Image (cartoon, rainbow, N blue to C red; front, side, top):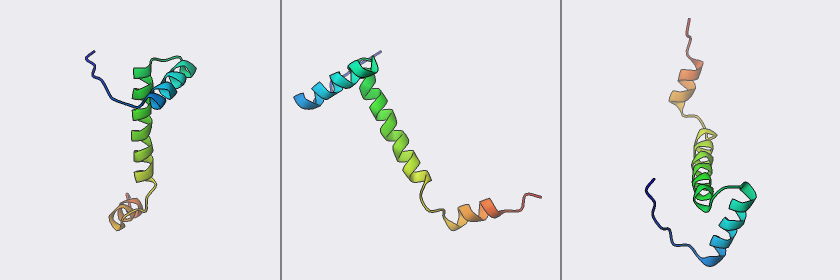
Length: 64
């Protein structure tokens, strides 16, 4: 696996280390989990929005 460095402040790094220890993962895996969670939260927010007229039309369509 290729890797790269991400510059963060010392306090954030300490929090990441604590989280990683609590989760039983590495700091890198903890960052990956956080990124995935943020992406999922964004998808959830998008899906919970108001339906467009086209989407309502599709949902109300007669499939028979």
